[in-house]
Amino acid sequence: MNRRHFSQLTASFTAFAAGSAFANHHEEEGKAFLAKFGPHPGLLPVGPGKKDDYLAELQFAYDLGFRGWEDNGFNGQAPGVQEKVGAFMKEKKMAFGVSVITAGAGAMFNKPTAEQFESMKKDLLRGVEVAKRSGQTFMTMLPGIRDMSMTREEQIAASVETMKRCCDVVEEAGIVLAQEPLSHGIGGGEPLIRSFEDGHLLCKLVDRKSCKLLADFFHEGQIGNGDKLVENAEKVWDQVCYVQYGDSPGRNEPGTGTLDLGAVTKFLREKKYDGVIGMEHGASKKGQEGLDALVGSYRKIDA
Image (cartoon, rainbow, N blue to C red; front, top):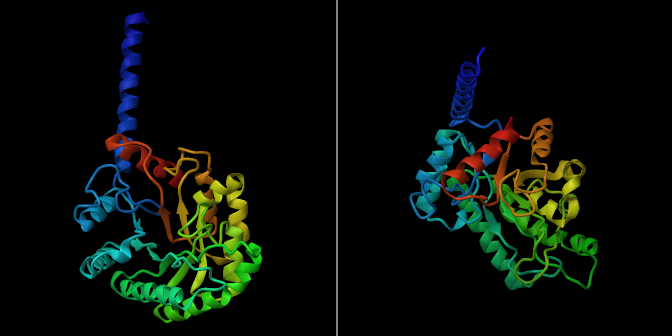
């Protein structure tokens, strides 16, 4: 074979391979993910923005293959929008993940003031009404701030009665208060629960079906447990009701940091977790390139 003929064959094969890869990539577009990955308003780099029609953004996510959704600020949407979103979810068989039901009203749960508890109760009752419209079950709760005069374990134990009072407000409506450990501060100071372990202790002591753990793997990675994500999740799994992703550092899509979210996804499959995996992070790039990178990162770990 002469060099010219060989070069032509090589070029043809390269073009064929590239075309096949392009075809395979686009065959995946729109195919439902195996896991219920859930984007949130404003995350997807192209498509309808969060200032546009809410349902159009939901439809765009659905067309990309996503079958989950979450929206921390959803309780602030107009009731009419909440009803339409609930109907859309039911029709499309999408799963609505969390929205934030209360950020704790700046209280220390071991000693909330009467005014602070009434503020939380107002948030909780509003969440009950939202859930009736949207069909949600899980809502994020931030169980207050640290009392530095006590050890964290002591304060968690002393916060149980307040949390039980919160459960009393929502339990009959079927809402589960998903307790989220945070790696950063919240209004008023350091959060009461910072790790999976902290959240697990709180939920075990409360011992109510309406108080469970939200396992956000970004936060667990941020506090120095990035190499123990699966190990730590295994330890607390009996209390986990909901999961969120975000790579660390950077809090963007999987593959942009150091966390092995592919291994976590495999772990969740082994545990037969069928709930929403909230995509509580940003996109590392903008425009179509950003959308391709974000969706591609989830296709990779969903394989």
